[in-house]
Image (cartoon, rainbow over all chains, first blue to last red; front, side, top):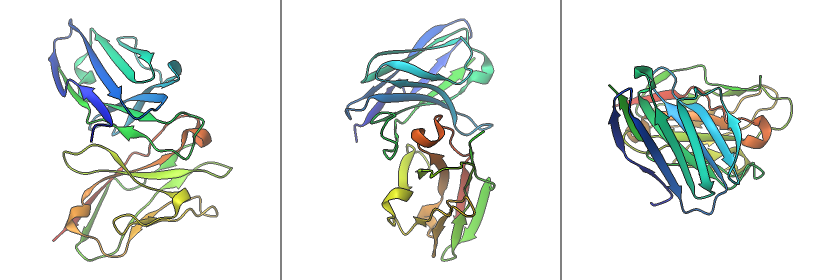
Length: 115
Length: 109
């Protein structure tokens, strides 16, 4: 299944590094999301984009910076992360926020480890 | 705040036993709710949505407005049902995609 593709699958970085996570979907969707999944809090919404416009920032620290250049691509730029940021980062997409009966499609996630 | 609540973190049943994963919501209107499942080493995926009133892999979920619940049920659990299950609202109803905290189902042989 192609659907929602996330790269890289695994990422190890130091606290001073800068890296980016990428998400791509070929489902023709217009809404895209970033979630954080960790052992302490199973699924935390981070950001929501609808037609490239950010509609939700769930009080995420500024060391996480999202970018949505078009409806098919979503990035999460990482800078000076903390050890507690180690988690699985999931990307999802849906048709758009106006279609409430349409579910979200998830990627496999990027497993991020902060040294 | 409008939320969905899954009160059980872990539910263990024996194979062949009935299973019910609980989900309660706080919303005054007519919610649209989903159940998602995450099997080991697989991506999170839609299991079923209440609007379609379908049975997927033997699971059903009925919206009970009186009890504000959307419990997931299966009459005879199978070992392959072992997974993490999340209850979630649609964006339209809740504006924010706050998933439930999830219930881990463990079906023992």
